Each structure stands twice: as C-alpha cells, then as structure tokens.
Image (cartoon, rainbow, N blue to C red; front, side, top):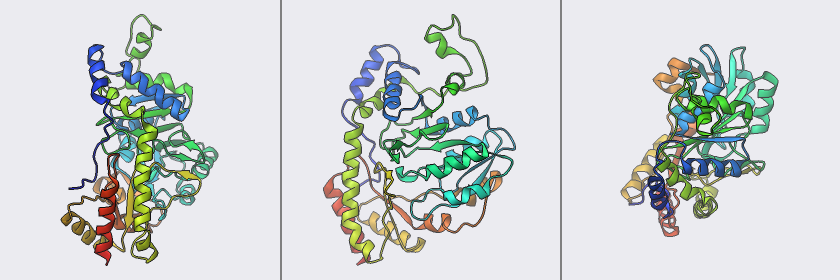
Length: 375
C-alpha cells in the first residue's frame, strides 16, 4: 500500500526529544522552541517567529493582533481549509470569498479589489501547494485601501515569490507543521511577524494574556495578567521533533522536488494528449513540492480514477469542499462575484502521494497506474 502521506522523519527526532526531557523543560518555550524559532527567523528574514500548537492557532493569533472585530470583513479564497476562515469568524468578522485562478488555484488577485468595502479590514491570501499568490498586486491593493495582509502559508515553508519567502509579505504569515506538511512536529505551526511593533502583544496573547515571556527574560520581576489571551505554546518535545527536520530543510525539500519532477516527467505525455492537467508554476515562483496533483476532466472521472488507484493499493486524496458551499460558509460569509472556477476546478483535482520518504520506484508505479487508467 502506498499511503497518501508518511510523516517526515530524519532519525534525530528521538535523540532531541530525549535531550528535551533530560533538560527538564518540556513545556512551552524551552530550548528547542527557541532553536526552532531562531532557525525559521534566519531562513525567512522575518522579525519574529513564534511557534504555536497549530497553523490554526497561528492564524487566530494573527486575527487578534490585527484587531479584527465584529462587523469587519476579511477577503479570502473559498478553496482553502476551514482554519483560514475560522480565525476571523471567531472574532465576529464576516468572510468574503473570491474566486480562484484555474491555473494555480490561488485567489484571483484581479478580483480582490472589487470585493473591498468600507468594512474590509484584511486580505488573507492562501499559497496553495506552496505556490505563491500574486503578492505584488495584493500588497498594492492592501496599501491603497489601508488593509492588513495575513498570509496563510500553511503549505509554503521553503517556497518563495520573486525570491522572497512566503509568509513574509504581509503583517503576519502562518506556517503549518502538521504531519502532512513538508516539515512536521505532529501538530504545530508558527506565526511570522514582519513588524517588531507587534511582538510584545503577540507574546502576551500567546502566553494566556500575561507578560510571562518578559519574566523569563528577566525584564520584569513578576509576570502579570495584561490582556486576554490563550495558551498557544507547543511542548518543547514537539519542537525537538521539528528541529531535527529544520536542520535538514534543504535535503527534505530536494527529495520532494526530485519526486515532483519525476511525476511531471512521467505524466507529461498524458497531459500533452489532453487527458489530464498538471500543476502550473509561474516563472517568478519557487515552490516546495508540497504536493503533486492532477486535474481530470470532471468530478465523475476523478471519482473513477480515485477508485481505480485504490484498487491498485495507491491512496490519493482530494480536497477541499469549497467553504462557501458549506453550511458554516453560508452562515458566516458570502461569495463575491461569480464562482467560475472554485467549485469546478476543485472537483477535478486529485492529489497523488507525496512525502519525504517516497521512493522513485513508487512514483513510477503510481504514474504507470494513472496511464493504465487512461489507456
């Protein structure tokens, strides 16, 4: 059986977790949490990285820092995971969905400005499959309309737009280290903060509303309740697991890129015959091989291919149900403009197995079975 995903593992994870236990500091913000944060700051050039228990919590922190309030509106694609919307709905905001581009599955930057109203507070672009949205256009719209930009870069670590790391354009960027991501700590995430002026408030929100971070740095003699907040800190054992992979980010990314390119080469003949469509990567985007997907003719064909591959002991995956068509999406948001591509393209998309330990012979077998299906 070839699973859709196998969590990344480098071999040093258990040793680092043992070290965390021996240091008798396994709660949040221990030595490995600090190492991970510093490593990500160095990789991205962001002013501050705060590890969180999930990308969901990173996005919720960003919504708190952006001071999203009831009655506000946040523009985003409907083709995304529910956490992108939940962060703002929890603050009482309405989400305004905009159609995606059919080539990258990212939010269509040309449609954003028309969705802006006097209640719009932020834009939340989602970098689908680690391929950057058109951030020059999005940042220009945000600047002219005085909007904040909160990047959902859950799939975007080690990817860039015009040479700049994803997650570092907006005021805030959010990474995921879920077990399905390129780098993993089981459940986990990170908040990237571009401007230092937000760091103190972010630390307070993340530490149950207290200035405990200052206390641990010796800046105050006692920590006190300063604001509302919650516990967004991951265990240092989780951070230890992640650090083993952060040390090998280049190796992990290259291994995935090798398999991605192999998929593309093997399936290109089918694409040239018009049987399937392959992922599109704009020239100015550097992706991270987070996923390899194909697009079938329609939902019916995708369903048949999905069943066929499972019969061959291959487990593909499909996602997402567009948020605007879900009960909560209809309750808490609205779709602005026409849904030309979001639903249609999402129904055609099928993700093939992709993970760090995926072998060349496995990719060859998967591609061969896709060819057999179409033949």
